[in-house]
Amino acid sequence: MMLKKKLVPQKPTGSNSVSKAISLKSDVPELDRLKSALKSLDPDCDEATWKLRRLAPMAKAAADHPELSDQLRDLARAWSSGDLAGKPSVAWSTPGKSGGLTGEAVFEIEWNRFFKSNYAGQVTTLNTIYYEAMEGGWKAPNEEFTTVSDDLTKADEDKPLDALQTIQQQYSLVNIGGKLLMFDSLRLKVIAGQPAQKLELSNRHDASLFIERAVTASFPNGDAFKIQKEFFRSPATSCYTGVEFNPRWQ
Image (cartoon, rainbow, N blue to C red; front, side, top):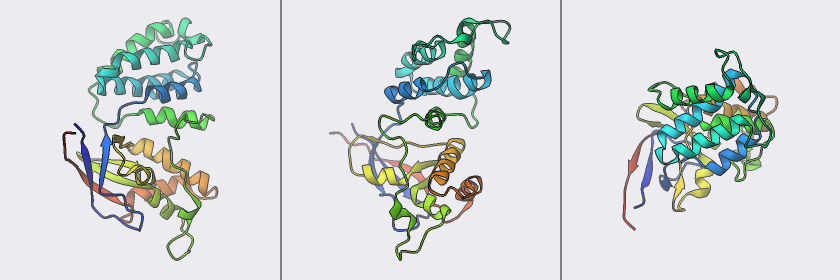
C-alpha cells in the first residue's frame, strides 16, 4: 500500500510553489546516515550535550519507531562508549558528577528516562545531531540539506532577492495537528512525483538552525537570527495547512 500525502496550501507565494500532490513515506530514521554523523561527534562532550542533544533525540526516535528501537539504542550505546569511532570514551568508564556513576551506568538511566518520556512540548530531534555534525565538517553520504542555488538569488525580473526572500523560496511551513513544521521546498521539487519518497519535517528549534545556516552560507553579512525570526512571522512565507492521505493499493 502506498500513501499519498497532499499538502494543502494556506497562502503559497512566488513561482516556486511546492507541488500539491507528492508520493511520500513516513519519516523513518536513516540509520546509516545517523551512524555516519555520530562518528564525527565526540562522545566525551559535556554532560548536557550528551544527554539532551544526543541521547534524547535518539531515544525519542526509538519511541516513535518501535521497529528500530533496539538498533537505535545499540547505536547510541556504541557511540557513547566510543566503540563506533574506535576510540574508547573516557567518560564511559570514569565515575562522574552524576552520583559518582560511570557513563555506562548513566546511559541506562537516561536512555530509559527519555525513551519513556511523556513530554509533549518541543523536543530536540535527530536533525540537531546532523546539524552539529555538519558544523564540525561532516558531509552527509546523501546531502541532507539543499544548497541555495545562484538562480534563487534573483527574482523573475532579474532583480536581486534579499536574504529573507531567498529563504522563503527554499523553505516552507506546514501546520499539522496544531504544530508548525518546516520542510525544504526545493528538495520536494526535485523528488516530486517519485514513489516512496519521504517528507522531512523540522520543528521550530531545528528549523531555526537550518535557516541560520543557509543565511550564513549565502549572505555572510546578513543577520541570520533576525531573518529566521522574520521567516516564521512573515505572511509571505508559504504555509500549508493539513495533510490529506489518499491510500491506494498497488
